[in-house]
Length: 100
Image (tube, rainbow, N blue to C red):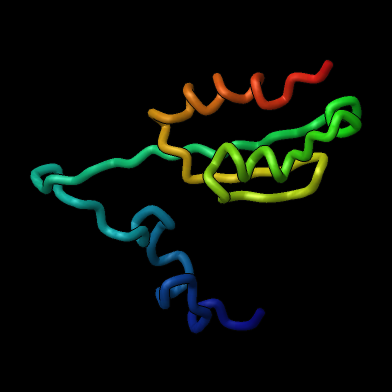
C-alpha cells in the first residue's frame, strides 16, 4: 500500500478526510419546491402448471407493463410502475393467469 498520506479516497479527496455522507451530493433546500415520484418493480414467477397451460412470465410482464420488462418463461421483471397504479395492475393479474 505504501504511504497513506498520498493515497486518494473517492471523489478525489485524501483518504479519511471526509465521511462518505459528507461527500454525498448536496440536498435541495427545504425552501426549494420539489416533487417525489414513487415507482415500483414487478417480479413475476410462473410455476410449472401455469407454464404447461401456456402462460409465460416474460409475456405476462410485458402485457401488464405496456411492453416494458422481460425475462424468461419462468421468471420476469419490469419497473417504472407508478405506485398509484400498482393496485389495479395486481388486481388484473389473476384474470390473466387462471389455470383450469
